[in-house]
Image 1 (cartoon, one colour):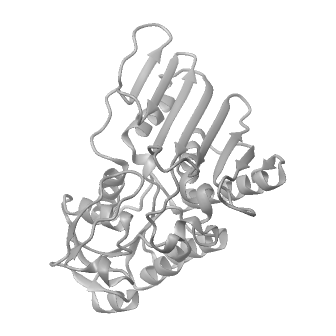
Image 2 (cartoon, one colour; image 1 turned 180 degrees about the vertical axis):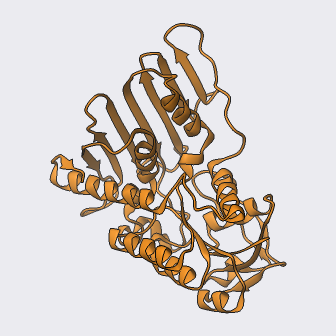
Image 3 (cartoon, one colour; image 1 turned 90 degrees about the vertical axis):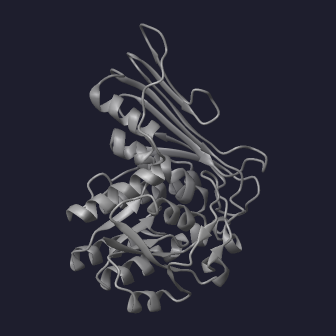
Length: 340
């Protein structure tokens, strides 16, 4: 039985806690948050942009307001890091050095230097470091990845990805809207599509980004459109959190190949449809569950089998952060940025 401690009991921490309750061979034995209200025996539910708010019963867990105390007093196999982005590296490194495996929420870290430090410590301690890039595990995106790798779409022509949201006002103390803490909409939200594009299509030679700001000033980016400059097909991703408050969260894609187009949108029914070049449209079968559920089940299996995660390596998660940084540079300069 793998003993888990969760640090950060906001929206994602609550989601992870609820998911662990339905998994075998894992037990959440401790939770930690600097806000005592979030770790009360009956913790209030917290909403987010996708997934249901969850009321939690924490009466069976040890509860801490100090992360160092949790590490010192609990015998943990793994720490699940669900704190604001600028704290990912500090807490992940402390957990790794305490002998724990780590699953950390995306993005991997606020800076590339922090990403590199996390990777170095994981290697030095021989502990697993898994970054929760959930879209790689989202059933509809898994279906797309399978169709791309199998050749079912044929030669790729265009790929368009969309991720749009109202401002994330649910974050405590507004930390998500502070780019110094979160990296802004590009690093927190848009990175989902960046990470999937890299995992499914490989790294492009260069990027070109244009950004728009509706309620922010300076170098903050509320909305971005990026072209990934592959040599033989067109790929674009649009994302941000500048939509009005009443606008429903949307994620989706349209990927066109010579054999048809695969279309996905939360706003459509059915959400996922394949329109073949020859034949009738149909909805491909997808796996059950959400990306949140599937990524945690995958990492628990990795721990059970003592097998480092391969579907999301720490290095690949670091690469996604690096590409977002290149996009930020492109948006600020208006120029194409080549990728290493």
